Length: 382
Image: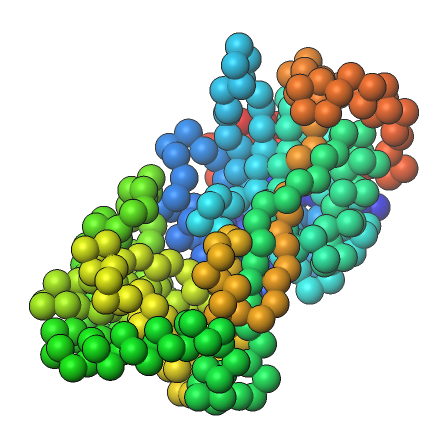
């Protein structure tokens, strides 16, 4: 029988489970323990509660088949507050998914039944942003439906990326649209001739804090909204520097931070995580020149196989990238609770409730309370 264990912090995870996070993080930085610990510490509200779900073969000695880091949030939906379980993600997250080398359909079914069987019941369960083409996406949808939830999938954002295919930066530039290519050449020469600008790429060391301050200055002077969790990105930059994966580009014009871009180079991929520029310097194309500078660095020096713009279908990304994929979300609504049923009517329609009651789970996992400090709650909701 497949078992589900629930942990209320990453520190409580057994050593073998933590190793699975290490393995997943070696492949994708957004699946590793440093990412989740930083997110949990700096990008959550005080009322949020971390809950890590682990499905395995039946006891604590069996290998994990699926792990989902989640968070309990109380959301205000008009006249009632839904009891919602969400993936441990937000707009800071570019990709989310199950952790574990042995992810199986059985593990997905077990996790879904674990969500369904908790008491008090969850009104809603939401997972995002997921790779819609990965086997895990279909397995999670099917598992949640089998567990009795009414499931709705939805588009989150497009993801533009570039397959380098062994090209040098010079060869890559030749494939760019002529307008962009000409702008790059003209603006770069003009900026260099003026002698006003300095460009640096910081990977760590003594200049890190100064570079973070420059990034913050450029970001605050940009068109972008203020960060709701202002400590998160600076701490993520520090963690990336410690891991040796940071590429923080800064353009200074007349000594002032004019543009900043936070890239991550990990497992052969360059991830364009954050970028901003001071609109006072827009006519100098400082953002475009900095993108080209970092692109040259990651292609010619780091030797990456892929460059990834991560989130969004902004028109300019198509000029730099060659391919597009999509990230989707899963919203599972519980017809066995009043708030869940009302949410079904609101999101999907009344007939979905009748269909939901016809869905019978074929396997009910056993829920095991994980060893935790006395203040923690093992299975019942918080």
